[in-house]
Amino acid sequence: MADYRKARLLMILTCPACSTRYKVEREAIGPRGRTVKCAHCGHQWVQPAMAEKPQEDTLTAARQPASAVGVAQEAAKNLQKSAVARQARYVSAAGWITLVVVILVLGATLWLGRALLVATWPATARLYDAVGIEAEKVPVGTGLKFQGATSRHVFDGATPVLVLEGEVINVTDKSLPVPLITATLRDDDNNVVQHWTFDVGLKALEPQERVPFETRYPNPSNAVKHFEFSFTDLRHSK
Image (cartoon, rainbow, N blue to C red; front, side, top):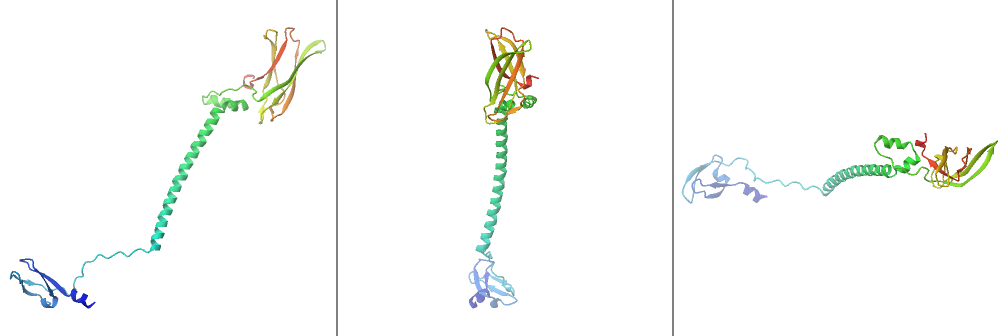
């Protein structure tokens, strides 16, 4: 400490003529200053006294090192903020992707499955027509089959009557609507002689469910040799 204080009481003099520098003690100059002479070039000048409180050397204060705990806490906060921001971006992106996928799947279902949709719910055909999409048609009664079709002749008084019988069965694993049925009578050349439409009296059939039916036609033509059943589009049978 003594050496430091002594060093702080020294002052450096610089000759204005030749720039030669000298270290002298402050007491040698005195509180009022004094005339000094350069030993190198002989130049003389008046050297003012050193200030009462010597200026300390300009030192750059070293920043106090942050504690390891503080650094760790700050790093954890930054990481947490970054993770939250990334998670928010991921959630937002995932939400948009999910929405797009749902729209695509729904659109594909409504487009590719429009035939089955219209067959199951005929009224939806109007929705497709409203948006300018032609609903793909599937055969009316798809998933339903005729079984046990028979014919017989009876008399209702003096009137001959052709009686046609059979049953409709749902061969699928879902409920299906039962459309109207058209009975067609044909001759030996397969020409249509007579035909009519009737209702089995049941709106829908559950999976594997069946319903029997009977229809009668009075005074059938003598040309009738064959008969057949077919399902009729409810929308066009009105």
